[in-house]
Length: 178
Image (cartoon, rainbow, N blue to C red; front, side):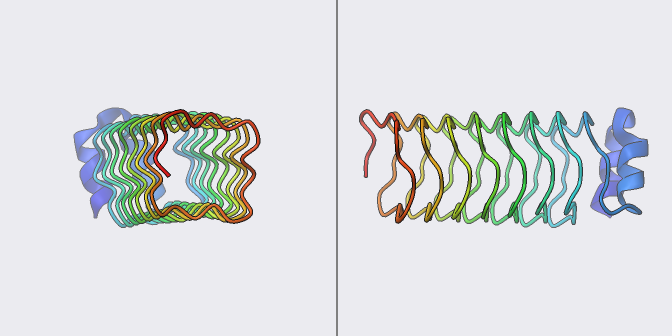
């Protein structure tokens, strides 16, 4: 239902969105889904590499195992989305809202998520090497066993974040609030 609405609004992606209704996993690589309303949609295992999801509404969407590498998710709403095992390496999530999202064992290497909201997110076992989380709000986020080596946490707010067993080697955390 939501995918049909997206198809009607975005002619460049209409064929790909229509195909997404019938495929598992879907190939939406490079699709222009700017400001798309995909709340609650099942895109598990989908290929969204390099897709433009700027300002998209993906709250409660199932993106587990999806390939979002290099995708533009700036200002997107991913609250309570399932991103377990997803590949977000080199994705852009500037000012994105991932509050309560699950990113267990997600690939977040070289992620650009400045000013992102990740309060209460679960990132246990995630590979966040060299991720840029400057000014991010990470309160109560769970980084148990995550690899944050070389990550930039300048001015990040991490009050009550769980870092048990996390690799923090080479982390830059100037003025971070922990």
